[in-house]
Image 1: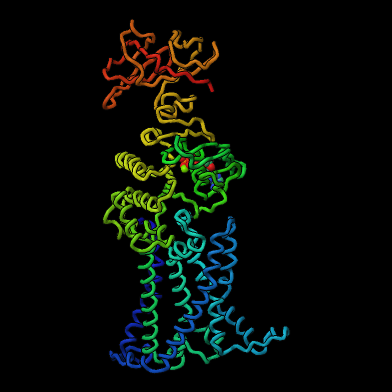
Image 2 (image 1 turned 90 degrees about the vertical axis):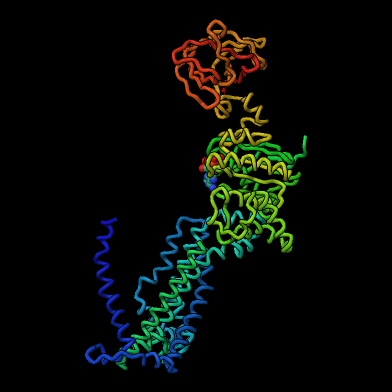
Length: 268
Length: 345
Ligand SMILES: Nc1ncnc2c1ncn2[C@@H]1O[C@H](COP(=O)(O)OP(=O)(O)OP(=O)(O)O)[C@@H](O)[C@H]1O
Ligand SMILES: [Mg+2]
């Protein structure tokens, strides 16, 4: 045990240097007024919070939640059947199918976003087929991009719970009179809820906080919270408000992970 | 004899090339407690799963009340199972687990709560309805599994080693309770176990299996007292198996002496196996016994002593109430009704 702990030492320092300290600095920035990261004239204040009510930020937050929400829902509707089918395959090659499914994740995400961007432009390689999509700047383009990138994150946790589900429970429900549909609705689905919740969180959070994707496929017209944060740091240079927005996102992530863990405890 | 409920005819199951159940024919009657007894891997679970409908049959037929059962899907059979690992639904509490089958039948709320309550009281778990499954001990989970099955009032209850995960004391209590329950419900129980003692205490009829074949079917007394071969004799209870020769006229020779016996369906001069249960020997002084042996070991077993006696180069196990000393030479007597002959297999 002690030996293992020693192995974690570099990781611990890595976390402290690159995660804990920046988060600490951002927390300080959220509650203060500074010029950039120059702390010499620091003044503690809550005025950053009062700016949150402005329509730009509200709109970005609403955009993030609705687009990510729709994308997540579509991922669930597509991903659940896929996970279900793979988990029930009578083959020992399941891993191969899973590898094929996640293999797109090994290529750079930015590259995949740019690929979609090329296809969605009015003048794209699809013209040779007589198709011109012209989707850049639409919500549809953003949602398609999110679904294509985050779908594996939905499939994986659902597949995991379905695959390790105790098959005798399915037999027990049949034994008690359930037909195939009832076996699914009364046993399989409720028992896979923990996987569904994990899947939802794992697609909803990165979609809601994406910034390269809405920038590219939204053509600058659709702003998500990630774009606003990026602008705060790179264009407006309001590090205090940028930090506050980032911290809010972090809090949101931890709160949802808390929900997942609590539900896992009660479901499995 | 009671009415026939289930009839297995040349039932066969093959997994790829592995013959697991080999042409089994068996009649199971109404309101009978029948036990499938056999060593691990002999196909007991597979037989049960074919009756429940979870396993395709390779060959043969199963009839239920005269109708071909294999055409009826598992969920429509009037048969319920108590699974070896209980298979309770972890997302439902005790009440909902038991109500599962009733809800599927769309019974109304008051009847459901009525029947769940009755079945909870039958397994002595009144007041446990709201508990989650994880909050139960192994024995309590076992009772919930029983309640969940009997609440549906099936015509047959299949029980696959339901007691194997329980400790000895709880197990003995449950043996009586299950037996009692079967009397009260008046339905057929098909019980699977590899524990011969459990089979002997609980069953109306025992089916001894080995390697997918039925070796013997009969009442507990029958299989205990009249095992058909060496395998059954050594599987069911402790026994001494001595090689002998049938001399005709209900006389058998073993240990260089002739004994009267009651079996007569053998050829004169045929080699036989002689079975004598440890409790059927009587320890006497040397002059009075036809068998003479030296006491090699003594173990006190609570009520009786278990002696290991060396006689004619063979170890005999003898149960007796009064103990000689190690090294004593003793005589052994056997009543002719306790000498059982088997064909050599
Ligand atoms: N699905 C299966 N595929 C292949 N072989 C199987 C399958 N199920 C069972 N078997 C084989 O069939 C044989 C009998 O198995 P079964 O489970 O019926 O034995 P059992 O008498 O219930 O044993 P136990 O007392 O250990 O539960 C075993 O050799 C087992 O390996
Ligand atoms: Mg078994």
